Length: 182
Picture 1 (cartoon, rainbow, N blue to C red):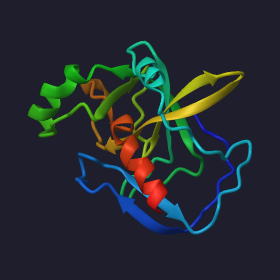
Picture 2: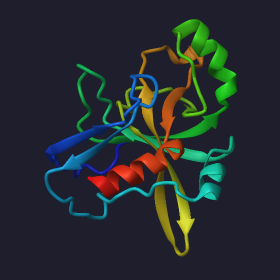
Picture 3: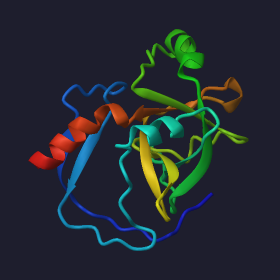
Picture 4: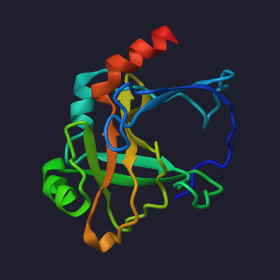
């Protein structure tokens, strides 16, 4: 499913990697842009999940979430329009042994597993693609960032592997500290 076609390119002045970054663990960075972003109907900041109740409710097995991205993986062609898809939480425990055995990846509580209903389209996501939840805040609806894509792979959908995201909530103190200091 395509998103709005309006996009902007901005330069990055500083990349702040998590101090314990490894490609599969603590896979998170903050970007400092060279200029301010002007918000529009389609370009707006996403909320961080500081409310524990919201995070817990959003990560229930029955909660519908969205993923989005341009499909950029290393040297592959990038989609012209940002894409999105509906996904559901999958139990981390359900996949821990399988990922360790078949891929050598140790999933931790800092990961989130999601699966889409229907077509498993790994062309939607790109490194850092968003896992989002739409929530009612008073009379408004806002998107919350629950995770960023951490592990990209080309696995046939019939094997049943989920998308793997770095969970945002364990990193909120680090994010706040870096924002204050930078």
